[in-house]
Amino acid sequence: MEKLDRPLILVTNDDGITAPGIRTLIRWMNAIGDVVVMAPDSPQSGMGHAITLHDPLRCEPQQIDAGPQKEHSCSGTPVDCVKLAVHEVLDRRPDLIVSGINHGSNASVNVIYSGTMSAAVEGAMQGIPSIGFSILDYDWQADFSQAETLVMDVVRRVLSQGLPSGICLNVNIPKVSDKPYAGLKVCRQAQAKWVESFIKRNDHMGKPYYWMAGEFNDLDGREDTDIWALANNYLSVVPIQFDLTAHHHLAQIHQTLDA
Amino acid sequence: MEKLDRPLILVTNDDGITAPGIRTLIRWMNAIGDVVVMAPDSPQSGMGHAITLHDPLRCEPQQIDAGPQKEHSCSGTPVDCVKLAVHEVLDRRPDLIVSGINHGSNASVNVIYSGTMSAAVEGAMQGIPSIGFSILDYDWQADFSQAETLVMDVVRRVLSQGLPSGICLNVNIPKVSDKPYAGLKVCRQAQAKWVESFIKRNDHMGKPYYWMAGEFNDLDGREDTDIWALANNYLSVVPIQFDLTAHHHLAQIHQTLDA
Image (tube, rainbow over the protein chains, first blue to last red):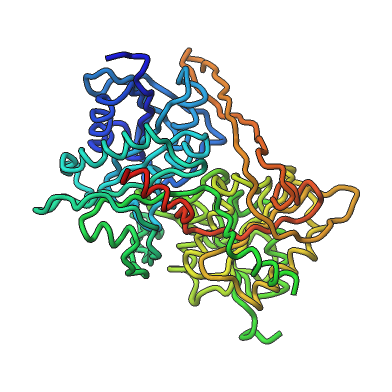
């Protein structure tokens, strides 16, 4: 094992440093490179691309499992973890950032709310090849093992070939069923929408509080989407960009504002 | 004033319900429509598209300034505010969502970290025409008045003509100088990058903490960007989409994974 030839891999997530998903990803990445972990010290689901501007961050050395990885927990968001690791803790730029494996889907519009995927997007913004992984299984005992070969294949290919500038990958893994996975499917983010309903209750002082609940509506149904791929037992792979400009609408907005 | 013909306008922000920027926007919107405010009860800068999943939300009626607007503060993020207003508090769908006026730039990649813009993006995800406004002036005494005519023009045009499905507008306003504004410029998000440096100090117990600082690097310099428009005294208008798929890279990612 020639240490100097091994890639440096930064591992993070949004479920927190002790979640089974990140423990699995760390174990797998140890076989490929030198692993440094910088992950939230508590769950950060739904944090999107939030960063901590007005509070200090804490960072503690950790060793949750035995292994060669170097681990740190961070009091901030997943995006804070990437920034702190890249700009302060690591002594060289990582060759790859992997985030996850998230417990729960980040397909379709979920990517926008996801701390897991925002960490990968931040990696892309820093110019580092980055991949977010999620499994459609909230169970803490989720079976990740069936996805190992396909995940390792994606990681090895990205390490050897890189990714185009300005993008990262959003990989979602179906929940394990009695059928083996059908393979990888490169696809686009399905058009879909969360319709929220708030559960309103009164606390013991008689004051109301609201709890967000919601229902996911696939408005797409086409076969080139991540939702279709996952429903058909493929791991979905969507290239995600951080240029949010709707380039194909520039002309129309011109017209709206100049008319 | 025929009440029934007036549009319903939801106003939110990320600096909190008492910030001068939102108070200005509320005053302006009162001239156009029936205004309902649902804004964070405390500053939420840098919250991106974060949502509150694991805690209840509080929502309180408020009346910060005299006026016809109905106001509510919310304990959640800007995106929570939009969801709570649209799905729980409002008795009909708003005709328009405006967010801001943010104290500080949301041009270029700042859009990704911005709670102000994430509220507008969430509006677009809900299918409601939405606009985020920001001024390049952190001063709580910032002079908004010079932008009133141009902002009102954008709002009136969007109300009368709508916006294409799947997009919202990111409007940034230069800091007031001795020259009048040059007008509106429809443009794209400039390529740029934050390079963070963390300030490391020890607390009174001798334990280290890290504070995020950073420097904004414009890597673009072309004349069709928001950064150029703002530097040349234009209000920049960027159409922002929430489909994050890098459509123009689908073929290349196919190749990377199939080779």
